[in-house]
Length: 322
Image (tube, rainbow, N blue to C red):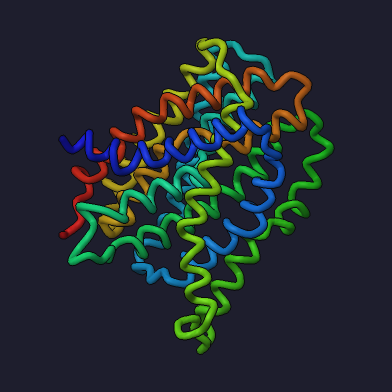
C-alpha cells in the first residue's frame, strides 16, 4: 500500500503537470523559451531565496555540500571508466559522463521534495513541520547542482573547448546566484519579511514553482522522442539512478551526523534522473545531439520507477521521528 501511496501522492501529481506541458505543446506549439525565461529569471530565484530565508540548518547539515561534491566527482570518475570500457569516442564519452554525473535536482528534484514532505506521514496536526528543513536542504543542494551543470556540465557538452572561458561570466549572470546572496544578506540583517507584503508574495512561489517547472519539463519531453535503447542509455541510467543513490546511502551511513530530513533529501537528490539542461546544451553546441537527448529521456522515463523506490527506501533507512 505504501508504494501505491507514494505513486499517488508524489509521482502522479508531477507527471500530471508534465502531461499538461506535453499536451499544450502538441496542441498549441508553446514558445518554450518564454517558459524557460520565466522559470530561470523569476520563479526559480524567488523559490530559492525564500527556501534559504526560511531554512534553519542543523550545524552538521553543512557537511552535505562537500558530500554532494564528492558524489559528483565519484560519478564522473566511474562514468569515465565505464565509457572507456564501452569504447566510446571522446565526444560520446563527454556526453556519457555528463548524463551520469549531473541530475535534474534544480527542477524535478526540488518539486519532488516539496511534494514528499507536504503530506502524510510528514503532516502533524495539519502542519508540515519538516517541509522547511527539507526545502532548505534541497535549496543548497539544488544550487550546487545548478552551478555544476552550467559550468562543469556545459564544458563537457561544448565541442569547442575555446568557449569554456565564457562559463564563469555566464555563471555570474545566473539569477539564482544572486538570490542566494540576497537571502544570506537578509538573514544576516535585522530585517524580517514576516509582517511585510512580500512574505505572502513569496509563499505563492512554492506552488507556482511546481506547476511552471513541471509544465516546462513536459514541453521539453514532447520535443525529444525516444526511438532506441542501447548500451549507452542503459549504462548511463544504471550509474545515475542506481549507483548514485547507493553511494549517497554509503555517505550517510559513514558520516552518520545528518538529521533524518536532511538524510532523506540527500538520498532523493542522488536518485533524481539526469539534467534536462544537458539537452539544451546539446542542441546548441552539438551538430548531432541525438545520443545525448535520447539518453536523458530514457533516464527520465526509467526514473519513474527508481524515484518511487527511492522515496520508499528513504523512509525506511532514515525515519523521521514523527
